Amino acid sequence: MGLNDTVSAERVHIGFFGKRNAGKSSVVNAVTGQELAVVSSVKGTTTDPVKKAMELLPIGPVVIIDTPGIDDEGMLGELRVKKTKQILAKTDVAVLVVDGEKGLDETDNGLIKLFEERKIPYIVALNKSDLLGAVPEADEKSIFVSATLGTNIDELKNKIGSLAKTAENKKQIVADLIEDGDVVVLVIPIDESAPKGRLILPQQQTIRDILDANCAVMCCQDTELTQMLSALAVKPKLVITDSQAFGRVSKDTPDDIMLTSFSILFARYKGDLEALVSGAAQLGKLKDGDKVLISEGCTHHRQCNDIGTVKMPGWIKNYSKSEPEFSFTSGGDFPEDLSEYKLIVHCGGCMLNEKEMQRRIELAKNAGVPIVNYGIAIAQMHGILKRSLEPFPEILKILE
Image 1 (cartoon, helix red, strand yellow):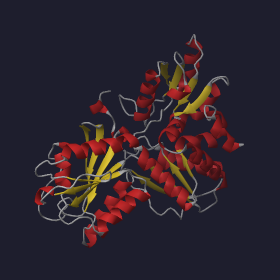
Image 2 (cartoon, rainbow, N blue to C red; image 1 turned 90 degrees about the horizontal axis):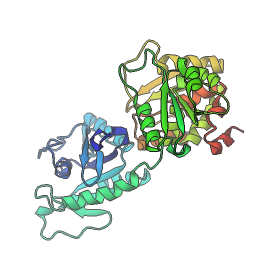
Image 3 (spheres, one colour; image 1 turned 30 degrees about the vertical axis):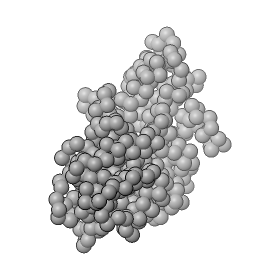
Image 4 (tube, helix red, strand yellow; image 1 turned 45 degrees about the vertical axis):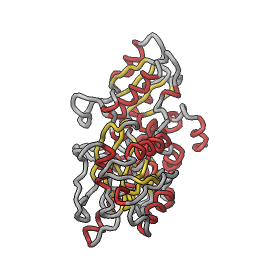
């Protein structure tokens, strides 16, 4: 996979923020070297976030996000401002674009406060330096630029690059659990929900991580696992399964082979495995009428036997022996106020970047609402959560 093939969820997300007519879009175009955003002297030209996955030197694969003016007005303006704040949830590095002639004001300082509260590394780009006499020197947090003349644009990119390095996800999916020469078996059911002719993103990423660790990877369906294990001359170090096949795979995997799921691996990779495992206990405490939020990070065509809207509610009802009330969100939609819910059940988050997944977990923690993901929930409801956490002994202590 080349740099230009890097999936958006694995790219550093760089958000450009600021007031209307501060020159955000002009700075975005200057930084990217493309006409990525519409530029106009009319305030509020950018009405919705504009996203572009691209290769940006010297940083590498990134997602650039140009946001509407934070000081937009009226009812539509309020919706745009709300959208801008939602973008903060997935922003790894923020660039605050300010009119250099006017300097920072209360609105700009309010944005800086939001960056700091959410621990988002940021740089202030004071635009329109060509309208000033002498251009002041840059400091650690700010730099004067001119999108019109290209002044200090390369320096701005270098500063963004330095911040991006601190935001990169250094975690591994599975490579730190295996050693050179190990064999890993991936169980990948092919059913009506499987995309035609390809593997889904977590499966692709896991395969690559195993290969990068100089290990061998074997793939089969859940119905072929017993035959696969019998045919192998070397005992696998680990079996990784799709969560929906957890029950059958657990029965067919010998006790001396470690077992886990893609969803559990991604809970550790992008989220907070400890918090998500702790949330599993709430599944058995649900009562009639309790509100449960089931949230997915992507939008997709719902199948008749969809896991989020059909299978998961059925499993939860059966396990808890209750009739909770279910709500569903997908894609970028996720409530800021979670206080009405007794439990949040989230997908593995493969289409979300680490920043956004952790933000959702943080919102649940702050509201005092337990949160669990699909794989952990399914393992809990099948009575195999302890076994599926064997690769993570430090997390097993939570269940003792």
